[in-house]
Image (cartoon, rainbow, N blue to C red):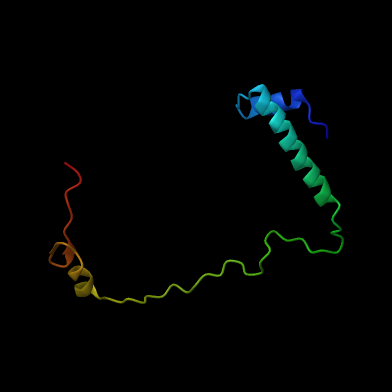
Length: 95
């Protein structure tokens, strides 16, 4: 694919970027490098390779949802700056 000034200007308009002439030249070089790299990737032999969306085999490895702390209310309330009964006392947030 040939990177032209019109293409760079069009891409700039699509992305709402206002590029100077120097930035357009730099962008053209960068886009050309990217497309050359993609062409190089297309040369890689992939026949017989399985399709995959992720390189790791583990999918959705969730742990069991189990209670580990139990009811240790007194110890938890001892860390609070203030408490009232078996509840945390907090600042009033709504007038």
